[in-house]
Length: 298
Ligand code: GUN
Image 1 (spheres, rainbow, N blue to C red):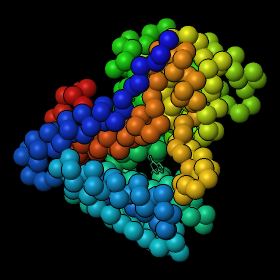
Image 2 (cartoon, rainbow, N blue to C red):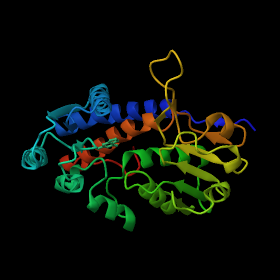
Image 3 (cartoon, helix red, strand yellow):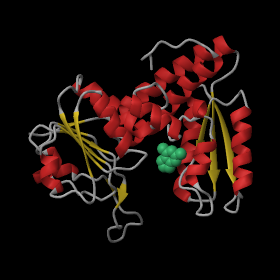
Image 4 (spheres, rainbow, N blue to C red):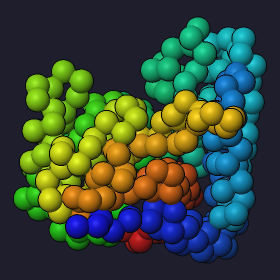
């Protein structure tokens, strides 16, 4: 079997375009643009790249972007003060504090300060709680993007065996919850799982989110599985090259021989994250401004 490539980049472009259309009608109804504020503390180069691309994506989708760049030595009080101001600002519908934060700042305390109604990352305990009891709230962008790709490819997931590799609060746990809500039979596997390979091999759906380059090979996968690769790992550079190749947690070439469908890296899950962030911000804007948005419209 040669697996079908799940084109996350194209799917994300379509979602961004739909969000952009909703942004225009939102502006007409609310008399202002939907707005996303991104807070970056410190100089981490990867974070700077992410923040820049989030800002650009907002503008391209007819939304307002507010960037707050703070120094490495920003105090707890200063950062919490910035969040308080954004919570109170009616032009701001969504607030994202780029992670990781410098070591002297407590990520959980900072996330807890964001108003749950503006927590478009879905990281606040209130939103994690809402997801776990089936109430509507904000769902973390990467797992929600993975679910969109799965639903688009497979339709009804009822009764399918799903294995999520990785148990982070940002991806693994919410991913498992979403799959469970879709009536899949869900296993969360992790670094302490015994005989990980045979656990993964029973899955109709594999979501790999561990950060170990090309860990999942063809002998890990059931024939016809659907594979969602959340990993983004950079291999050491080959001789004469400045940068190493980007690979996922799945060996794409090998897995393609066995799987029915697989997301590539890059161009699979990655582009979905920002598209879903815009989607969540658009949903927040409608709720915050009291403008109706049909359930499931986005
Ligand atoms: N750092 C890497 N990915 C993310 C994300 O999705 N949200 C936030 N806030 N920080 C990140």
